[in-house]
Image 1 (cartoon, rainbow, N blue to C red):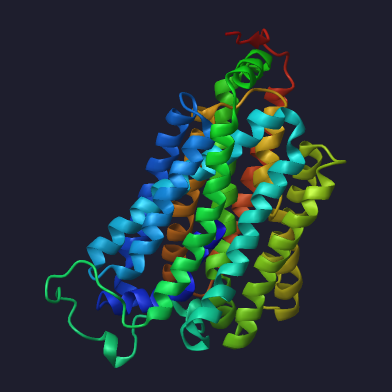
Image 2: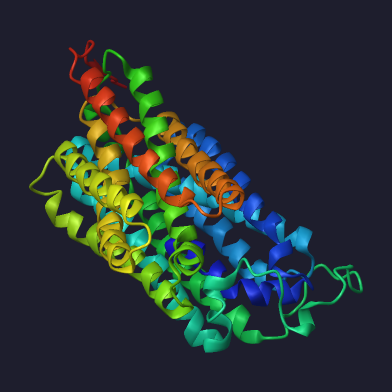
Length: 414
């Protein structure tokens, strides 16, 4: 999923060329993917409670593979946006289903596995641009950090009118097709294992698993879910906002050149991915709540230093690396933490994923508007600091509610 999500960035210029559009006029594909993700999260939450998890994830991967193979063949922007929304639906189901599956198998003992799941996404997102670089060469990938530029070479500045009427066609650069086909082939291999798990399950195993499941419900179950919804909204919003705007912020506000700003962007996501990997081992000996507290302290300190010393390049380098490292474990730790107090089923997980999706959609947009209206102020840093403060307050509220006496333990027997 990480590879499928990240392959878009370094190939966006080639996709724009396919549909005779400028990159700046292709915003509908991001809207389509976001709407698809929201829909997929809701659909996945319902389906996870009524069908086999491995089968659902396997089918979702097949839909994702079909979308990946068709995207480089799209010849109109509308069709490209539709394919992106289809991929978004798959993302929503896979994101929700993957988290739920970890909780179903390991319950409140699954913190290391939850960290490993989210590390794998970061690893895939790291590898996808390298794969694109091998397939497409350095020319295309060099535009990865400039996707907001409103112009392309003269070949792209043609009319956006539909060409001869063909919806699908082989791209001019076959390497683009190979890049997406490679990711699709890898996902196909993974889906085979999921289908194998589905067919291997016997009725005896299903019966024993179902009878052994224990469902806990905190006294304020719904309130906890609503608070965690907001927690993920602000956390993911701050993370994506900083990762999206740090390059332009460093060049316009701090005065860094593009090479330095790209390195700053890389160190943020690099420490983010590295600490997600290390968190697999830390989660085996630390409680999820402890990891959240450590992450909150680190993110609060680093974001505060970013605001206080927003003109200092040295502070920007150090604080960005600490900020990325601190944010790394907050999402998987949050899911593992709440499972200790109340059971998360498919619908609950979908609700939480929708909160994260709203954070991805809303917070960067607000940051862009504020930065445009107040160019002399580090609005992006203020939003990141505000997000960290709010997540810290929300966690304290959640902890207070969760440690109240639990309601009656429920067991579902078949």
